[in-house]
Image 1 (tube, rainbow, N blue to C red):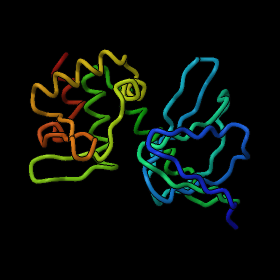
Image 2: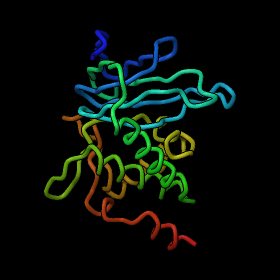
Image 3: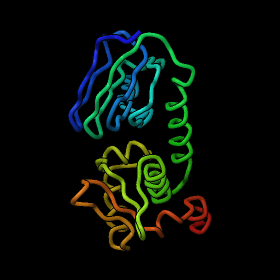
Image 4: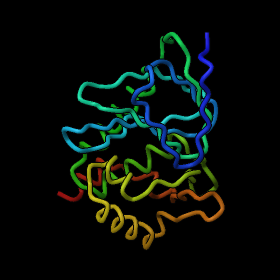
Length: 193
């Protein structure tokens, strides 16, 4: 039985899931960031990035005052009553992978691991590059890799100078070199010590 609430979000629009009853969320189109706001730490934490075809059972983690749904691209969502068997799989997948990214010591390794993760989940392979069809702000990437915005900006500039990352004017996203996709962030960590 589907709830009548259907929500259309424009790119970068945020839906606060604060006073609404929690339940099943279905993403019909677009790419959506699910985040929790934790007032005690005065921070917002990315819990998952999901795309069309995913369904999630939303529940606020302990200490979380609100769930925020941010449209990375234009999205269409709806809420359903009931719970599906795989409704936590997408969030668990992201929590594990973001945890692994954050465990790397060097911020450069964490940024490369994040870009690789995003390409693996949402990207497209081309002959000599990979593309990500959306853009994330430097501040958002910094939050996701537990770094500062200025560090992400500096490291992206270095990757641009090495011809490993480009901004795509046509898609509004990133283009990543094959070389960068083939790098192992953990090997990069070992080489730097």
